[in-house]
Figure (tube, rainbow, N blue to C red):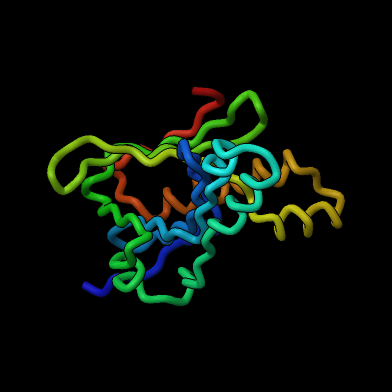
Length: 171
């Protein structure tokens, strides 16, 4: 069976102790591929402190040039910065709105070794989308809500019906 692209989520921010990772998410007919777009070391800069820490953090931020929309899924899945999760390993997908008016995504899955794992991130619309909507008079909250709906719909189209895709208000 040929693996086809079913959906794309341009931006999911995953916060880590030493910085934030910006992923694009490619949904295919058989798996979800989280493709690293950039990695910030702001936490490291904060630990160093002051203006020097900020300059060092900015220098350590890496941006990737992989275009998940046009690259082959297998190439993306093999990239060192990517996380590939087969739908058969996913137990649930949850999208919720936090009190801070941001939306979050959590994907629970089993690793190839059988361990339970999750990837959790913020569904921040791409800045270009926010700017375009602002010019049309659409506020940030509405843009974020529409983005979360698009992510929900993409998952519902892509994953098998055995995977729960839940949407809720808060965690």
